Length: 592
Image 1 (cartoon, rainbow, N blue to C red):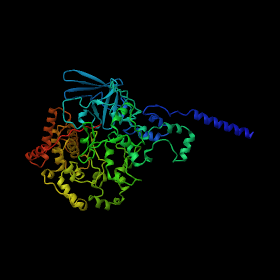
Image 2 (image 1 turned 120 degrees about the vertical axis):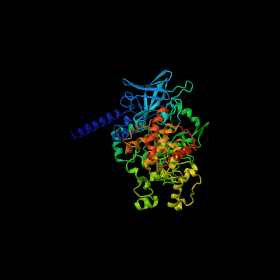
Image 3 (image 1 turned 45 degrees about the horizontal axis):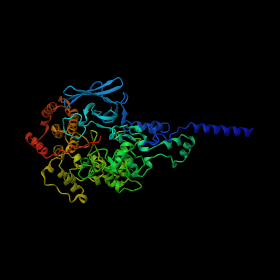
Image 4 (image 1 turned 30 degrees about the vertical axis):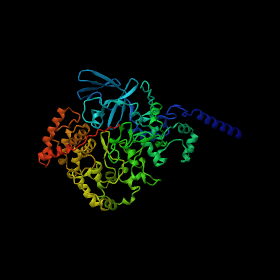
């Protein structure tokens, strides 16, 4: 009787086991022979990884590219839904569950585009329209921070022009590669038509963990899952960036946060047809090389995207920045800095994906623990330990990079040297805070405070370097430098300035012929107005407004703010004009 019961129990167990095995999902082999073979959708990961799915779903990565639906679209298509720019009238409309943009030329000719997908969900929302077999990026975007419509010329470093559609562009052969998982444009070079597919819209699980079919198929067995719980080191057939070397882990991020070209340029046709060959965990350097200041493709140069010393000027070049950093080059091979030293993909503030703790000096102190005490930190920085001058980020990762309507810290971690502002036109960390002091002042201070390091720095005899750097950069720098200074003079970062000193200069920046410079100036003036000029009745200048509108704003603001400046008017305007005469305009292709 006992034996019979044991046999029945064993048979039942086997039956359950075979039933479970029979009911397992079959993942391996999906999308066979495509570039995304064995890639899964993020929803496939949900049943086992609810916490990671939830933390990822909160990120802007997850919403980078979306189908345009009422539940996902953030732009105002129903109320404040018109924009006139360069005499073209734009109207954005919601019709049922569909969205449209209509552009009417001055001659009355109108063209309507469907809005089929969105790109971006944090600062600006861009729109894609599917036209004759490909997606095009429309020329208008929605500014999510200021809740207004804008022409993309308001985001890029180009001067006022006459072409409303200047930044309308193809999506399938360019943007698709970094805003989605495993892009496959499948271009037909004869017809120039695309048949683009992606493994998943947005930056999803596959971007960082690679093809997961084998892992998921094994994990569908309760026996395997039990084994993995007891053996944390068991092979799970999935890429975990935390377990890779610093180089390989960083390459996963650098795949998109490091603008690149194929190592073999002639592979571009293969990539545009079959798709992106890179998978998380691969050696990125065997497939792509990050573009640098001296990179050329035909006659096209990338030089303007870098400062004269080769340091990146734009976001999406963070990989190039950290590769140049001594922290990475000379770091302990077993504990080398990489993206995950500071950033968390499943934790922290979704704005930058970084924890509050890692916004302090903590990540740097992991290696530089000799500065862990307040006394040691003060002796090192010559600033009070609890001040912004003792923040590692402020001095060693100054905010000299532009991306998506904002200024960001560089990832080129360096020792601040104000001399580079003179020799390389690179904004320096000292004058990022001390905007009302000159570069020569910063050089003298560095020479005095860090005598061993900077004993041989010399002031420059050119009188322009005796002018407050915030003012010199605002009017004589190239457009990116002017934008950086406008943002800082308006309160960005940690400036040590009196608004009554900075406001008159910001007003004059409204005359700049680059909309993005006016954008930062207008934002700074709006902040000053809100905090200090509450009863003046001043309106925020429209940086994309017509010349008549801008002139009217300029006169109103001058009347209310100019009197605050201690300089005599003729001296003030003479200085502004003198600096403007020295500036050099450099247009800048921003790959947003």
